[in-house]
Image 1 (cartoon, rainbow, N blue to C red):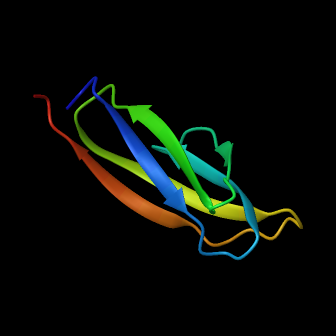
Image 2: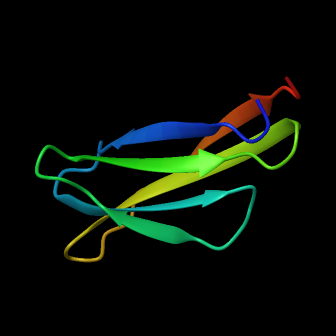
Length: 78
């Protein structure tokens, strides 16, 4: 629903991942550190209804970056 915050959990598939790189709706790429278990959690609040998307990549300490994973997100007004 518009205005409701959702949590997204990233799980590394690339061995040695230290950071996740992500972007909502093609906006600026942001980063979040991967925990020791290879996961990270981010929160996002939709400010409009209908279609949104999230892209996520992972990066190792050596600078190796994975391919992107793309997710569609559908938001209802109510």
